[in-house]
Length: 168
Image (cartoon, rainbow, N blue to C red):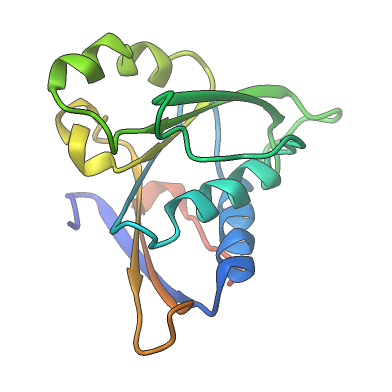
């Protein structure tokens, strides 16, 4: 999955709270027009990581997987490096491609329009719409790790130029 000009950062999560903290740590590095593609099997923690990202961006309402609505919009604030004081408001577009049955359904969601709307896009089941994703995306792969049902191996693939270093 390593694209040209990217690096992989690998670490482990001991459970959902740890995965949320990882998402909140990632939020500190996000900027307008970032696309975060989330990959993993059913129950691997994609929504949990998205909850952490949203928490890190100041979203206060519950964050759930938009499995049936396909996209959910949240209001948040830029965090971390380069954030203004007071923090700038930002929209978070949370997609879920799990129930997508055709590329036409993805086209109807206008992903490119969302990717360039000045917000941050989180996409669960990104593999189902790979052809629509920008090359500059950040990719997060969540994998079960070992016998412990809560333990996850998380692989973040990012452009080298971003210099992202997460706290785990």
